[in-house]
Length: 75
Image (cartoon, rainbow, N blue to C red; front, side):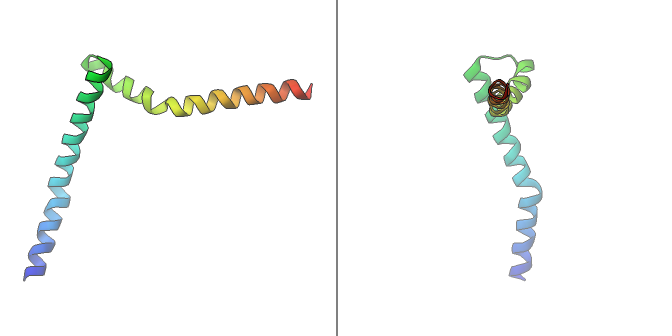
């Protein structure tokens, strides 16, 4: 009986409480990001995406520069 109750509690936590906790953490992260960069509500999403894509942009630019340097060396 105790095992069944434990499984039910764990299932309920996984189903509801964990999702709620994730939502709260995401809201806190958005508020911190908003305060850090002094953004308006409609600007937050775009700024967060830009920040996440920054490493990809740097890698792309390094690849372009490397490709350009190789092309010059081959000619």
